[in-house]
Length: 165
Image 1 (cartoon, one colour):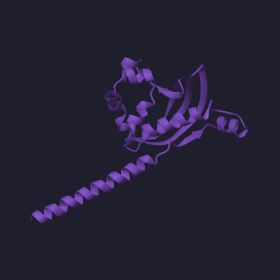
Image 2 (cartoon, rainbow, N blue to C red):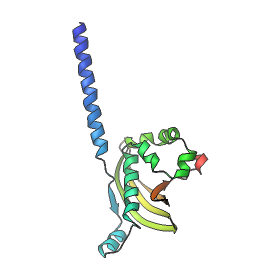
Image 3 (cartoon, rainbow, N blue to C red):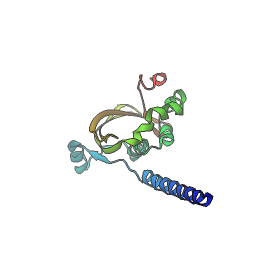
């Protein structure tokens, strides 16, 4: 009887290790499904520049890839410095921890607008498949600020994060 329980326990441990490895591989290979509106495609096809810099585009893609793959600690590091000082990571995690249960089907960039030097807004439609299978498109005016030598994501939400608004 004890040998049987021991074998079952070993099987369970192996199963959890394999599942853990597979899930970490799945999240590490996730990449934001980025597309562009027809107007942006025309601009790019004509040789025009859309993003202010490659560093800015990479920051946008990296941030949303981290958020939707559940790597919240890394995503938190890409939030604006003032936000990190005002909102503890535990609060940030509690708000966004269920995001990895949804599937981001498409992030269609519509516009990138310079608001001020070092401050931009990105108009983007996120097409999301929720955990219950409902597909929804949500428009977001995503804000970014350049501080020092890096781009940071800006969150201003008086309901979710009143201390940072």
